[in-house]
Length: 442
Ligand code: PLP
Image (cartoon, rainbow, N blue to C red; front, side, top):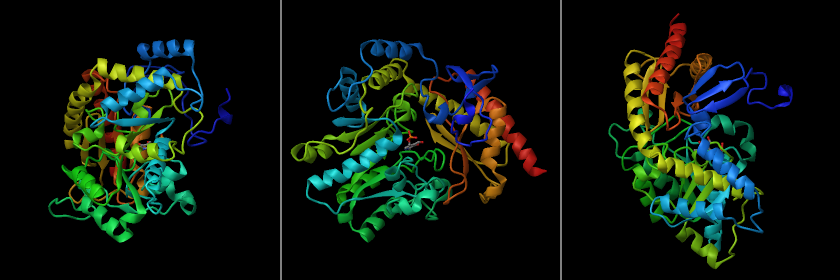
């Protein structure tokens, strides 16, 4: 009912209608079960239908759901800001609440630019990002994204921000024979070319998600990046929209790197899909000139910091803490990675199995030895994703074979997944991949 009026990602695709979710499973109106091995869009970190969250939702709704942020603050928003500051690398962060990851990165960009303006440095207004990156779909966020497919239609409207090499070891963009972190040096080369006086910030995902598929940087990469940023007075924005809130085995992906970003964008796992919620975290020293200057940040939305979403996110953080889900992401991530690697040994078209915690990916190749990709027309990832879907398994696409990226799918189930569910996941995925591999070999 009403289906024909709903704008869906692919308008004529027969999406099933979902009825309810429980744990790592979703059930459609025909009663078919789907093992959610992608947590939706790497979002449902604590699983579906968690009663603690429903209780927190009801409790806050019985008090007040919405107040306008220019008139009031609220206890849940204040508590959430304090909790995030305590959890984030090195502490001392302020929180600006928004509704989506795109708004979180775009707000980070605006705050970074404002920071320099308050210091009288008006020329510092470009943001450097990396090829094969995704920071969101709004114009500012898209301007910072190296995601060729999502940018394509809007290129004339986007800011022409500079991009540097990704840290993509499986296909080193600099063809380095041995790793001396040349991909990090590429940032310095770009800064020298453009002039640090024009650059407000550098933005990167701790682990590349949608634009490449769980690409973990080489050890020391982000330490070097941060050191370059500091040397040239450029703020470092960590886009933790996908990696944040225990997904990689630490609360923040940057904690694996021992780096304290100047700004952090959070989304997805912050509310685990129970409400639209995202945040831009801003280090005290970035706020300082704004506090001494205009005392107001030129960003925000009607629903920013609404008490309902803040209360839900607080309940999600409590749940993550109470059930030690960062630890689960580490142990179940290791379990699943082992199983996927074992599975991959027998399937020639799997070129790489990678990731950290429960943010994992498989990259597909036509030839494992020379890593030749399939031609785009083969539609390898969409065929595997569709076949898995038919079997009741949800996996997530990474950008396929564009701008240097290979064909990859992301495997990122809720952090509450059990070993038996992980085994079922691997079995269904293996069946789907083998089916597509067989079709390709005919
Ligand atoms: N940043 C990263 C790293 C993401 O993965 C995404 C979404 O996939 C975004 C930003 C945009 O978030 P949203 O879709 O909530 O706007």
